[in-house]
Length: 503
Image 1 (cartoon, one colour):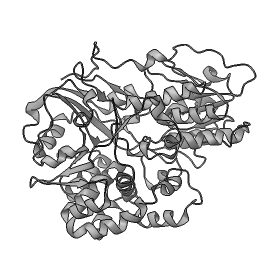
Image 2 (image 1 turned 135 degrees about the horizontal axis):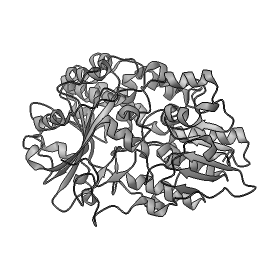
Image 3 (image 1 turned 180 degrees about the vertical axis):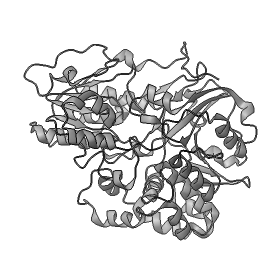
Image 4 (image 1 turned 30 degrees about the horizontal axis):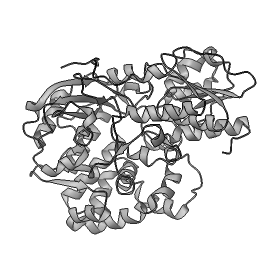
């Protein structure tokens, strides 16, 4: 078992090789900006600024750009693993990413035959298909309920995202938003029992809701489930060919084509490092904003940032395998994403445990198996797998036995195919990406008090002129969609009255 990336002749082309490691002054007489951090929101913000004519420079502390969109050899030479994000329904469904010519910069999406599989203990599995009708048929008695809830919203995905992937405001499409609003506020466990009669449909919905990283008894835990389900039907749950790094590289390449600059190995330790630009956007957690700018922030605002709450973390494993995962239900091989958790009751118990500072003995596990559809991820005949479960924030407990046991439960013989594995605790994840505070991958708990106005009521703006927050700790929150960066950049452009800010 290894815990550090392995380098060698089979490695990825180092993204940092295309970016400068030293900073130069901004051009004279040009409105300029810095973006601190190169995650999806930082890169989206930088592109929006560059398209408006701003001389923008991205400063990334790590050797490679991407934040949560990175890939590396974490196990054996030739096995490419996604460091954090792996499957990207919100990226392909993002209004701002859709406006970028990322295909021209090397991004290629791969759509598995089915977005999601949820294996069951009887050896069968339920699939979330691209088609609403196919999914409804698989849910049998609950098919009509699924069709009624999902069908109309699937057809209005582009309109829906304009309202749900932004800050609180009057909806642009009020009827669509109202229809979604009927479904979203409910606790997932209650919604599952109210809408569905069969354990199969309830289990499928519970797995979707677990992406909220909330107890399934919490208000709004249904919202994420419905968004992901609608996305599966509207745009799919694709993977980028070559790994998540391909998405980061495409964004970086497009930014550079607009004249933007990217500097890696460039940590920012104080505002003195970025004072030569009138606009600075932080693609960081509120804690990092405090560390860098705390001495100049008003005490009241600083206290609000200090009170900002982070949610459970994740314990992550990556596997180099001698063959595909041997699922008892063969149809599970049609999906890149697999939910391991059994029933609604099991998943609910698992997702409640981290909030009580516990780890359930049978955790809900999210599994990705990208090499089934992308042969670039592993040497011929071999495969990769990615898996994580939710644990208390900052937990240092090794949960590898529990994760492997859960996969083995639905795929007998899985352990015999493991060639090597990589383990990442919450601390490991934060060490490699400071935004993942305590292993929280959502930029903060998506509780009722932090779901809409995050991290404070001022959202993207701070009390310091020209200083903005554009990370997942702002609306609409976690996920690889770039919309936090888009909205923060729009605020910056509006406040600066840049000549082209309305573009």
